[in-house]
Image (cartoon, one colour):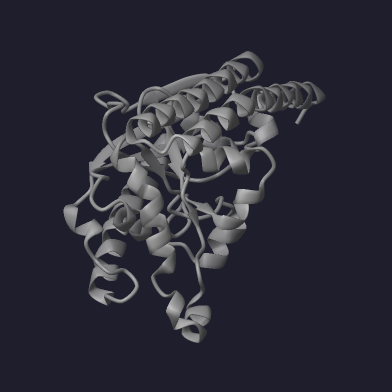
Length: 296
């Protein structure tokens, strides 16, 4: 990575930090106002204001990306999407830049992305409180061993998230979940013995969790495939500084079967296997698409 790329990337990050400082203050103020006005009409209107602030934050970040990175975008498959629909979104995960790519292609095209977050992230400076204000669900997941020792906690994580998601019944959202659960590296790929050439094995537990918590609201999966130029730096700094000349994004809109929101993933092995087979089929097609795009 050249010094110029590092400089441009650092300036872009500085701009994003200042953008965050500038917009979190009004976000906090409207979130506080929403706490003080527990009426349904006020709650709904203030939630829309908070979403508008978040979309403005993403739009400013997109402008900074355009200014410093010089990336040429090749995006297909976004036709026919609507801001009044609910979506489940997934993508192959290679870099922290993936999140900026997803915000770039989706902002003000579909409802704002909502990530299911670990409860510990609630304490991230500035952003933790902002995520709370924007109704991001914070999950407290328990290990199987912990549940065996404390059976009274079984189902608590699902119930907490289900309550958080009740607000989504009043306005559309796009729930984002990286099926791989972590960023792809060749070392992780080999350690897993992944059957895919360009992907890690998908983890279906989080997907089942999101689908069940949303109680059938999610009827369309946006299956996003992100392709960076081979041989270029995939770091966030490299992406922002212009290490990549272009980014290609292919979005496939897939119907989500109704049965995916109705089963008990933890206790029903037949349902669990059925969901795993459904996700594995999607992942095999994504892997083939990646192979084709990288071979162009």
